[in-house]
Image 1 (cartoon, rainbow, N blue to C red):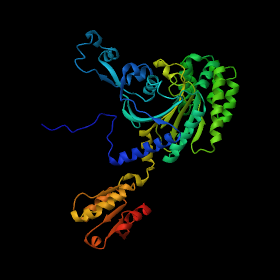
Image 2 (tube, rainbow, N blue to C red):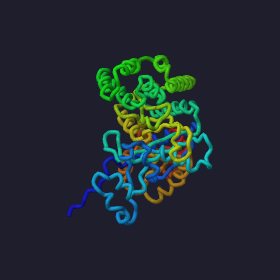
Image 3 (cartoon, one colour):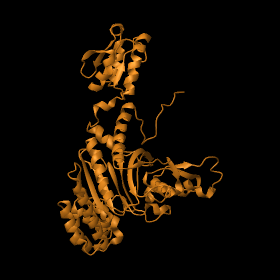
Image 4 (cartoon, rainbow, N blue to C red):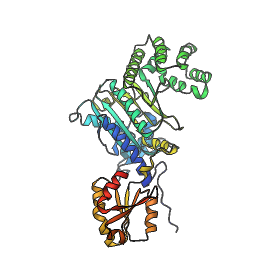
Length: 458
């Protein structure tokens, strides 16, 4: 019988050494920026109790949770009636008590409530871990992927939002990705729905407005009518749908349109304060645009909303987030406000790969390799290899005494910068031959000078 070829589930991926070096470059960059702004790391388990996860992401989100079967004879303990057709959700709950985390934010809220007596507020945390969603795999969308979250919880200050804008700018500046940061405010959206007399149709309105570039103004208006929004309300919406100009000009128009909405005016004031902070930082490489069609999980956010797009690649958002005023309330700790953003490492990877943005120098973790011509030669190299490693330089000694051509081929495939050769002649003269594998240049260096030479040429 033919053996089945091994495989992995759809929507998941293996990562080889080259990919991992690149991924770690992204993680290390993001982590270094987070630390620079005073954020501390935490980790939470891959699985949470289903009671922690269910009901936090809406009906669609609940369907995308990976549930974990109870151990033991779980079927025997369940009511057979529950397994009837059309009752799959209730049936899964009867035999599953745990699930894989869907994001990092809800586990973070659980963490804050569980350890509220041990942490100092405002609590600034970052978390870089995988999450899982039972989604249909497609380009840029996976069932297992990493999130890189950064949040401040326990503070209402808009300075937190402004610092998140700086973090976004700095991360993508280092990664050399040209980005557009779209911002909006849930309060402004609520104000718009309120002033046109359809506060209950907030989601319908924003979904329709979001399509204006794809389908045009007339089709948007037709969709609004289909959703039960009357012509008078649609007329009031027109200056908002067609809003153009700078962020300041847009806010000026909104001030007039939303003057009778208390919540809408508050949203405008929050945006104006945020832009004042951002302007005070000085020029940023990231473009920042007030986008009224941006809605991002309206049930989740209560204030500012962020979404980052890569300018040079057609892909979904590569970073997003916002302000949530009572996330911990679901776990019994009400009125604790927080704000955060999540960097999508997998999409960032795809963007950088497509645009060839990874530095060539990161494709190898080894900087120097010593040749191997036998036990005596290796013993000659060992003390210097140890000294180089102690100096923070990554070093390999080729493990087998094979033809030098094979050793050179290995160094080339691994993108190793320097090949250090120690044969009979080098040992007699107490020196090394050093070949720069990038330029092809080869020089002779005294035994005692190798470390200094390598350091000055890396």
